[in-house]
Amino acid sequence: MSSRPLITFWGTRGSIATPGRSTEKYGGNTSCVNVVWENRHFIFDAGTGIRGLGVEIMAGSPTASKTEINLLLSHTHWDHIQGMPFFQPAYSPRFRLNIWGQEKRDVMLESVLSGQMDSNYFPVPMSALGSDLAVHPISAETIRTQSSVQVDGVKVSFQEMDHPGGSIAFRLEKDGTRLVYATDNELNRQFDADGNPFPDSEIGKAYFEFIRGADLLIADGQYTDEEYRSKVGWGHTSVSLLSRIAHKAGVKHLAVYHHDPMHTDSFLDSLSSEFIKRYKESTPSMEILWAREGLTLQL
Ligand SMILES: [Zn+2]
Ligand SMILES: [Zn+2]
Image 1: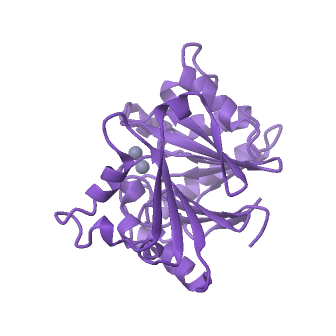
Image 2: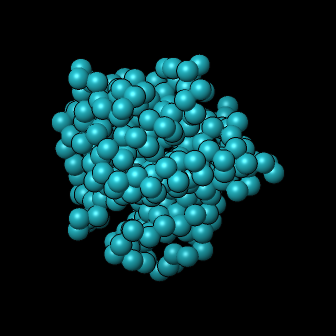
């Protein structure tokens, strides 16, 4: 394991798992990214991609000592939690599982997670999870005041985003390296077409500062401009606006993420080639890539 972050995409699809021959390249599993940093796992979201990650962690972790895992949930829509009951380390006493996520005013994070393991939906209750499990609710106050916490030597900050029911972005920082995970976010309602936050958008202005200078930004770019027009209010962003904002904020590498279930490999190939070329030739240049299952990046 490295002191520089190693990032692996285990699920890149938005909304619903989309397996099949037309999605083999970018993948059909829903949201899940594993970051290994300071010998610790920081897992963003527990979509269906977390199942395979769990199998790998089980095989690669020592049996004699406890392995710490931090699971950071952007929000609890199905495509971000549905793999959780299939995450093998959650059942094993060999692991300590710290789950971080937003606490809603009237709904406890823990009750949302145990709700999907109710016998109406799943055969095994949450009480059967044999790991050393700790749920760390992030309060609205913590997010609003933009405070941060230290998790295993890495500074973790939070930012509220524009999404039905809410969603939070996470920023991991250590020794000047910054990584932001920001999915399920409707930037089109917070920014103008040139990539400037609207003057009255507190969320937009704060988001711009949150991603400024990031070495890697993993972000929701689910729609084309044309698709976005009929999906206003659905909580997702057009890739053209996302890339404009990221470039303006000095992001070094942008990973477009949370692909639409209707976007086949060939569609994403042609969409991505246009943007990759545009930002490679821009000043300063920005590397933009389309997240795909199995891709590993080292910062
Ligand atoms: Zn989603
Ligand atoms: Zn969502």
